[in-house]
Image (cartoon, rainbow, N blue to C red):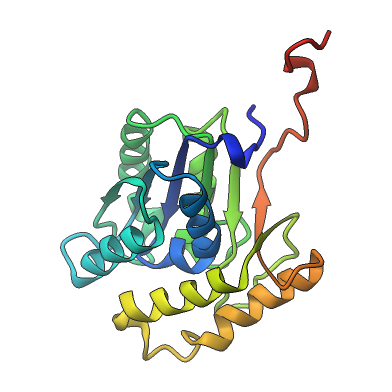
Length: 221
């Protein structure tokens, strides 16, 4: 099992059930990592949206959220809300995707999410990325399924500003949704920031996490 050292991150995997999940749940963290590590390998995988306008939105958005990164994105056409009926196909596609990458960190949806696609992807991920650190990001929506995250990742105010701007610029198909607005995105980031003593933060739920691998450090033991 791998621990997390952001300064040594070489490859990042982003998993989403729908186009916009990744940007909404972890956009600030992704921006922060890509700005800090030019050339970071980023591999994105999204279950639904292929061959629709949503795919075009997602590809443009992830390119903007990953400035300077070595980015590739895979998008499937699993129907929205129907992951349980397409489980075998999704598992096979995720396993095939896994063979193309060796991430230091995986960002994914969470197991307690009320949306069956989010929940299903979060349950699939550890069966494919078995020895990897997986952090589940939050997606605020109408369902009352938010839980207190165990991991809080501080993000700077200018990063939150950029996240909000990019969400509105690249996902015009979502603007009519009552929850898709600046107050939603900035509000949750502010709450998580308060909880970690910073202005803003994003919250994550780990599956398993090593705090420190001291025994493996040079000169120890």
